Length: 122
Image 1: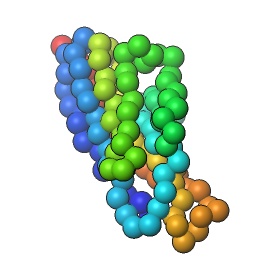
Image 2: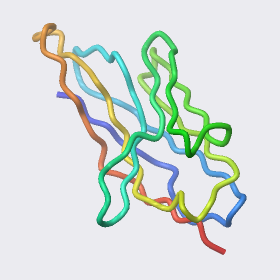
Image 3: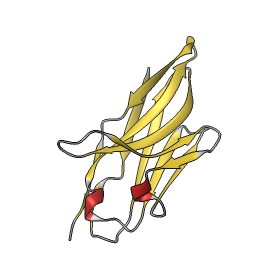
Image 4: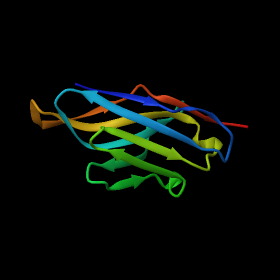
């Protein structure tokens, strides 16, 4: 199994910055893609940004130019640098990983962290 642990959430003023971090742990697995999703009450969980093991990135239109995703394949971590934060960025942010267990290399699974709250308010 793969476990994801997020950190870095909190309260920040509009226009401020936060950096979210996520680390994947477990034995004998390979990650193909990691990303960040966010969810607010009554709304679905939406993709914020993702990055493949090869470094290809994808961003939601609402965060382009403000957020930057990065990863370290060796350390199995993914970060989300969030700048110029807006109140509408307030949400629970979840780390996601697409990974395969070495024991089951043909079966890709999606793993989720516990979520971290980001609140943008003055």
